[in-house]
Length: 98
Image (cartoon, rainbow, N blue to C red; front, top):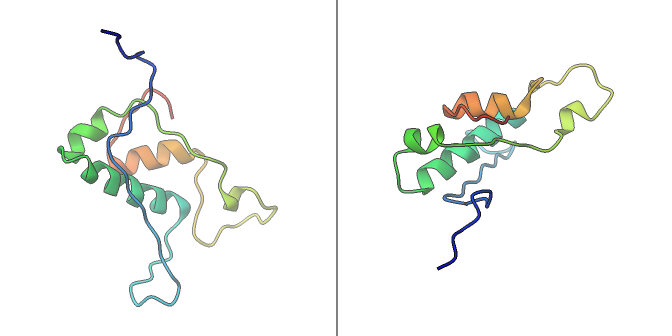
C-alpha cells in the first residue's frame, strides 16, 4: 500500500460568494469579506464542525486583489495589508502560513 505524501493538498469543502449591485440585499462587500463568505461556505460544506475544520487549516493564500493593483489611494470597499491573514481571522483560522 502506497502512502499519500504529507504535502499533498486536500480539498474538503467548497464555497462561493457573489453579490450584484441591483440585488435588494446588496451590501458592498470588500474582497476580504467575499473571500471570508466563500470560505465559511466551504467550511460548512465539509459536513464537519466549521470551527474544528477552521482550526485545522494549515495555509491561507490569495492572489493580488484589484483594489491594491491600481494607483488609486483609496478603496471605497476597503483593503487589507495582509489579505490571507484578514480572511483567516474572519473565519476563525490560525494557519502557520498566511
